[in-house]
Length: 603
Image 1 (cartoon, rainbow, N blue to C red):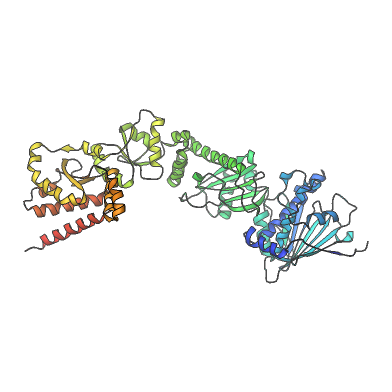
Image 2: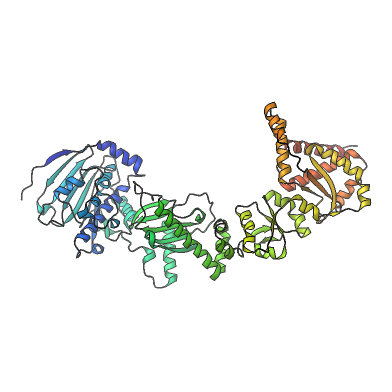
């Protein structure tokens, strides 16, 4: 049969504008053209299998040939008739998946034929599709040729030009583009389509290279669990770039998800943006998905395949809808079950995991009482009894006092430890919440916020005679520290090596900050700040009468020198408390330092 006369038609859009939209706004890179070609080929094979029960998709072959200037991809799929070519290829966004005769089961398809094929204009100036329908053997093959200027032609060609059902797509590279180089095409075909359920080969006209690696590694049979683990570890190193600390199998039938979660071998910040690798119906969707797992599971990187979650318009990420939220919770539950299983069955592996990712477990345990109960014996907290777990600490200390910040804890830790007072550092992320949750697990445990009075009440008073003898010294010391709003008292406590302790609380700190702001404010704001003044207790400098240095200072006859020594003790206690220095504190420390130098250098 002779070739019919071509008829010319025109797209009803500005195609160049559409190509610019695709390349600069919809797709992250022109490289997705390979994915679009593979999607169309696999969808065509799927559609043919649904129309012909004897057609086996798993035994089919998609061949790609590229030489740098041209690329040709051939599939043995359902093919197109002349009518379908006009309907599907000439309509922007037209989709074979909207055609009931071609569609079949929608969930079996990857993408949309119309818009996906036009994406090839990001790398090609001419696209030619030659197709023969498998549903209508009597129909002639059809050739559709489109150019990036918006014009296309459609013609029927002799059967000898395409003797078998299926479709061949040919691309002619844009001037200056190198996206059709054979090695680059092979790398992209392997990246996007290695898990597809059909065989894919790439060649430059010579021996074809098979890029298929199906079924997915996590679904393959392995001779032993150890062999499977080694294979998964090797995959992680090759694809994700790190040797995993452990591997968690993921299986969420509701979302059609199967895959693995790899535990990172190094600590990572919860704010670090995760990068999970997601395949949609075996086609790589994205390697940078950041919404697949709950936020607390920042210590894993997942590789999954799904057939139910929705992709975004660019098909480069997952649409964050209710289905993804359900899948995310289910994946989180399986990660949580893995942690609980380690706690029950493999404590050594659990300790190795917690040494790296304790923060993530603490984040999860805040919202999961069951996991909190299982994990508390393994989680470590900074306490006055050292780094220990809360149940063990609670057995020897009642009540447990919670310091609200790291500075507050450091300020009192040595004294509290010597006095047998149980204090936990609640200044680290999540620790305060977990300590406060302890009474819910064990009602006999009592947790209280640490107040300065708790420490001062545990310190031994000096005897009455000594206190009377020290009164002149204390009056002079209080006068010297009045400018920094600090009182001075004398007690006896351990350890003897600590000469002074600065006791402070949040209310007194807030009041000092208010007073400083009032002093620096104008009349209007100064009046407002003055109206909210509180009569908060002052900070206390507690001098340790058991310390030899304090005893010698209290016996100094020179009031000026004794006052300078007290200022120095205050400076040392202030630095030990890690409290930020105010301008008044800095001035006092400078003055005491210069006075001491002056005294030392006197003749």
